[in-house]
Length: 405
Image (cartoon, rainbow, N blue to C red; front, side, top):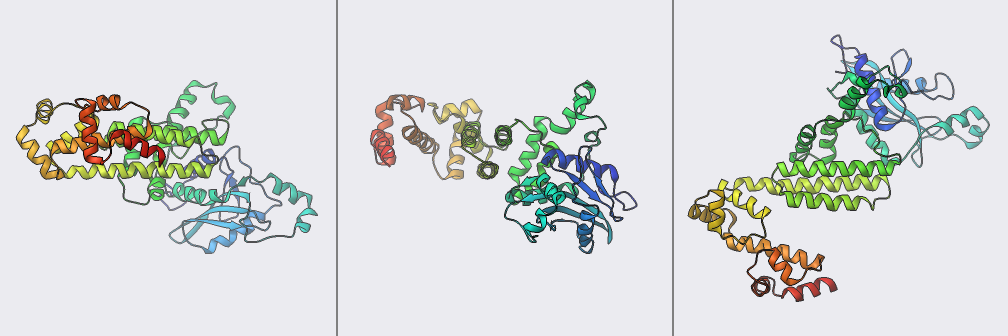
């Protein structure tokens, strides 16, 4: 969508891209054409310059770099531009850029403080520039690169309505709400499933797919940016857990893990910590999906039994009763289960129950009796005997050891 049929810049797509990036980052987005004309790509943008032609003279150096990718350009006063130079069939079409921006500790050129301090206009210019953190720069470069190479285009993002007037037009409000920021949960789950199933590097696959969820427009979910991203994490964790369930992860594990991550995100103090937690969230679910998908090599009857016991670790039913409930032939299912997993069904189920018991003993104050009943053992005596036979310690001894370790 970036080029017209004759190979020129597709202007509506360019405006869409600028609007998308501006809504996503809150930063000024502009485009410079081959004639060095600079156009702000969002109606509330202004391209800050200390003097006329300042940006154009520096962006002209990029004309020799014939590649459609993003660059960092360092300017005279140690500020930066994040640029994407556009070439098509060897012809320079212009450069999209975010900035100028100021950032701490990332400079390639510098100008004497004395020189700057003598020119009040330059000082005012630098004071007005948005400040970004170093870790955001690569993210923004990836974002520009992804957006410029996207084939997705939704003209409803571009609107001549002033923001303060949108609420007065119900049809526009519905249109913007439906097209810019929200999709059906089925659509979002499908995109997240693509990420969970992919073998690619998470960052690469995420950048390809997350744009399909919200058109790269991420409206704030709170007035405080940290709180906003934490709220966004909660939404992501919830939808991701549902996507994982549809790919075979048990609902107990998926929802339980989602609860854990949602609690953990509250301890994050900055955006970088939240991003790292986001990585951990996806890495965890990708691993669980992979484990679950590996079970697809088992027979249909074994998969049915595995799914049942994963959801009913507390069952006291016999294999015969479970097979009757699932409509499976008992002898075939029993033999096939042992062949597929290497364990008899009863031994496998007991192992799951003991693993769950270990978790309860080390993380809760439930009594031995309550744990025994919750896992479907005949009585506490039988549970204690079975636990000690497998673990080598009684439940009470195991709990004491867990507390002291």
